[in-house]
Length: 320
Image 1 (cartoon, rainbow, N blue to C red):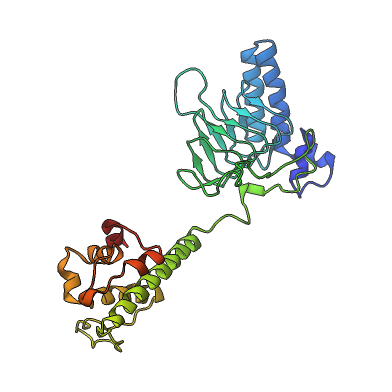
Image 2 (cartoon, rainbow, N blue to C red):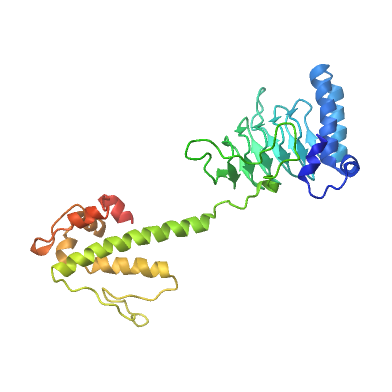
């Protein structure tokens, strides 16, 4: 159990860890309280030992809780581990972590943590749920659903921000260590933080850029069809004066390049020939083009549209 100090770069000597680390003291006291609770059924005496440990360390671990080997509590103040909680081997908890229950009913009501789980400061794992091996719980997350192995969970309520497993369904190793040791945790990530966690804002921008690229391809198809039948194309405009609505086919400067592209797409659809506006909406007009409806002079977009993979429904086109 004392090898948990290997996960704290501030630990200098074994003597320092044994005498000044409240997490080590709390785990040692729990070993005694758990032995009294399970082996001898001395529930009152075990509770007194746990209460004294809480008073000395600020860490509350119920004597009935099951704690695995090489369990480490860093800083420790405010940690609460409930009666039916189960913690696997090589787990790490930071200050303010709660392994709590959501029911007053007897029986299993606290979470079960697998091996090599890291729970960041202030996180709460509530209810009889299972947290898979190697999972990471970010700081201040509130987890109320089961967590798959090797997953990273953040937010309130907690959500998985990484896919668990590779193409073959086998989860990649994380926080791995040889059995029986904690000194080889070369991949250990403090506080459940990770350098490769996906950025939700960057992901949203990437999705928008991909959608804009697809719209550009479709507009190119429409442009070629209009040129083939001699239809005039809208010309760029420097913008309307203040208080005036920009005419059809003009572009209005905006502070966002993305909004400029979306505005150009809208103006392009508005500038389509009148026979394309006979449908109920612009979205249905685009869908009609994609499905092979002929333009004036018998020009059809079906072959070009299908070659570009344009086969969306009217509803999807309207949403886009």
